[in-house]
Image (cartoon, rainbow, N blue to C red; front, side, top):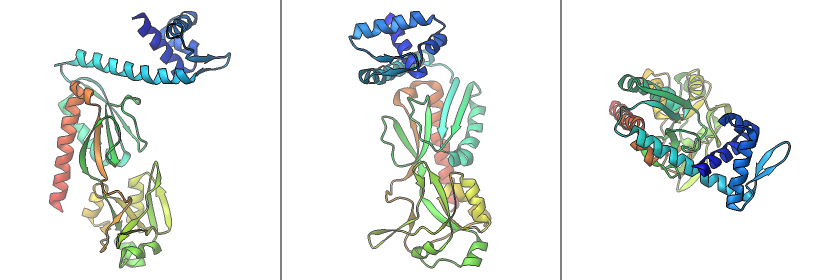
Length: 308
């Protein structure tokens, strides 16, 4: 237990960059914490930290050790929580991360239903298009759009995430309906911005990919704002069908259909995935949320396809 405490001290020093701040976090004297970390280094026969009057930095071997013990402590904490929560009522704080548009359109309304079913679960929801790492970012469940993630997590496909081109009737009346995908190069474009940059308009003709992106009039990671600009006739928008459903049903926007379908990537496996760590499924609050969201989101997707 003494070594485990020393490891916790060491991790906190790395995270805060200071022995004084780490000692304050544990409410112990800085000299005591520093001595414990020094004893840890002595037992390992290695220098883990470079100390100076201004800053504390990891050595090369210290970085390796930090990465390893952080994963071990995360696993240990998860194991403790699994034991404490085993066969109990789903309760406690549940951290969910989701991409913004999906969160606004689909996730948040479903979480209102979930809260009514599980009032003892405190929802901690973050909407961001930046990728989160489940173990590192203290996230229980993540919902992402894109390709099957290359992580050591379980990924459940919730729905397809293909993009479709749309425009308002007033835009098409003013600028004309494109006869084919290649003509899009001459049309105003509203572009969704991902962490990797604006999504292009791509078209595959005769086994060759072509970039048919038109001149940009607006670029944003806010899908609702781009959809409103499309409704106002400012340009053509490529976005996901689930994000555009309400605009298509109301007639504010209409889908543009061409002989050759458009895409934003040459990879055809894009979808919306729910991600979680396998061992976390044993925790009642996580199991309840995973089961509920997978069932309800797939039902929502089926209903949407049935209407079409």
